[in-house]
Length: 378
Length: 65
Image (cartoon, rainbow over all chains, first blue to last red; front, side, top):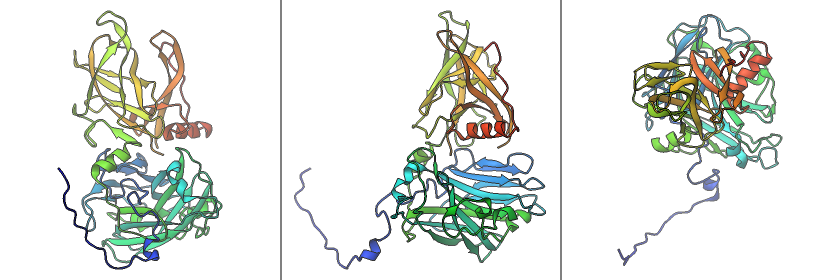
């Protein structure tokens, strides 16, 4: 098609320098992956308890930690559709049985870890270290003051701040700006560069040392300023968050919405699940593979086909094989319907793994199913 | 991270060579996983932290695999 006419509309009005002083102007302003809580490859609900699962991921990239909370607490980490205007999902903690008291060594928090090589433009450790602005939507049944901190793993340094939930059960927008760290260290590698920590409860060991400017980390800085533990000491209490954005500069710009497909692809550098999200006990998502060994069909052998991941992962991942009934470390034998347990993987790299492996566990030429997850979170 | 068992695994390569302690088969929160010996892997890092703290022992690999 030939272009024969082009109409150009003029742009009126001034663009001033201060309007442009917002860090990166174009796409990828947001350093957070899955900040709108869209992607949940592990499923939409996970139970936590003081005497069972007490740490881990559910919504992609967001890690919940119950540190030494070991008396009574249990609750649920979930992805829910309740969200502020313009968002479709949020991360939610709901307390079941509450913790009676918070001991000095107890702490509960949500964490997000950013890869160091993706933060080199912050210029930490130089006189031109960049400030960062964190913005998010939060809602809780418990009003009060909550701590947030940034932990710099390579420099072992921390800065923090607080926010106050003033009205219960109401979405509230929070913005916080953190100075750049002119004395920091940020290695250019695949390790952890920065960790964002949202404290939900804190014992006194964690909140006694001022962290309002960057300093060498001591435990007392971890949740400095945190003054409300009611989220885990109150039955049925809730805390929710979504729309998380971390960007260079001192201005919180509108949330950078990305498509589900983009967010999923970014998440898969850290976690991949061959099954439908959260569904580990179905043949959907299982992959048919073959065993190989001697040239004699049916002879026992040790290996079945491995897999290539959808993208290069951050590090060599932990790989978990799943039988179609949900049993981990197991595969399904198509010929017989049998289940082989105690299966591991051989030759994992950041790109794939060579085999499923069990000594004399397979038969040459037979076909098998397995699903798998690969996890290389920070 | 609740680690209840850990064991090194050997492998017999296609050429018949035995590769010692190639991976750790571990049960974390009730799930059996294959953890590579990569310090950048968070599960491996936690396993080694617990070993150094005397909280976990990695069982040796079975002799015949």
